Length: 171
Image (cartoon, rainbow, N blue to C red; front, top):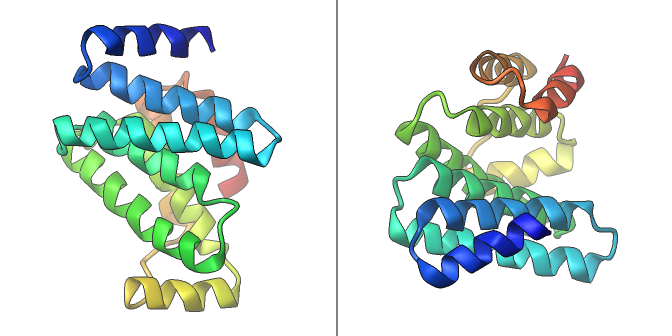
């Protein structure tokens, strides 16, 4: 929470600082994800989305800006209805693709896209049917793709610990 306050103070001085916007978004997502109260969680996720949107307005080709938008959407959509989740899945993929187009070895995006692949591969039949509607067909996903992406993340940043947990789940 202290780090978030520091980034918010930095944004008072420089409201278009893309690194500060991205970190503020990421920290809001992380803090919100730790909370159990749904209303409080959603407030943090909404703030994360707002910071990410502002970062994208500054530079919509920035790897960090696209990553934090994907991250905010991935966390805030967990408790949404099926249609909203499927729409978010499509947008998450779009932002991760843009992030990796800006920096093909951006470890956070590699990890989140790997997790996205694992999650989508494990969807139930009704969820996959809804995904077909959202995507106009099923996106190409597999556990092998998930593992490959998370292994790339591990090679790029072996200290990114959450990657190990999701990599173990994918195996």
